[in-house]
Length: 257
Image (tube, rainbow, N blue to C red; front, side):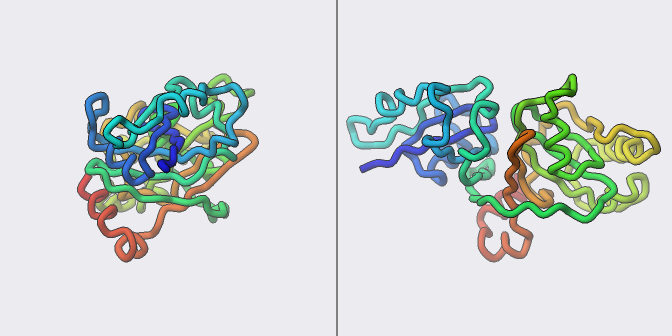
């Protein structure tokens, strides 16, 4: 008997039912097939029982997510593509899957979030429902709470983002070492960071309106975060030693992207 999975895709946003397991789905979704374009993919597995009643057309799963006449599995049935993340409670989100451009998939599980020691600056790549890169003096939990604050004129109901390494720029934007940082226009990044750390600056500043280079897997620091005003989840990203020892194929693919 085939199992049906429910996935929340972030690139692009969508709720998808599939008979493929996460690794098969990751390869299918990243490598392209007819309606899909090639590229990285990030998705959560979703607990159907944790979804609000009547929010999504879940009856379509039984009707459409069935094996083909030749016995091959149904790869995807789209259930929603609009404001999906905001309608799925954080508690209903399961493991997170990171897929490289050539279809290698890494599974992340929830971890305990421990607030970091004070740092001068952070760099965040947002994925859903918006996708800029932002520098901030706020740690991940504070940043999540700030950007989902309903009292602010600019906010989102819920957000998924990762933290990226700044190397020496985190403490000394203009003179710190930036060895191997792949971000576009490093001089602009230095200037935005310097402005952020100046007296009476805003707590966060926009670095890039939109990221065209894809997902910066090889400079992820800490991991991935999802949350709103009430709930928050952290998915720890393995360190380099773990990646080389236990996820070598994925890590090699991520560095080549």
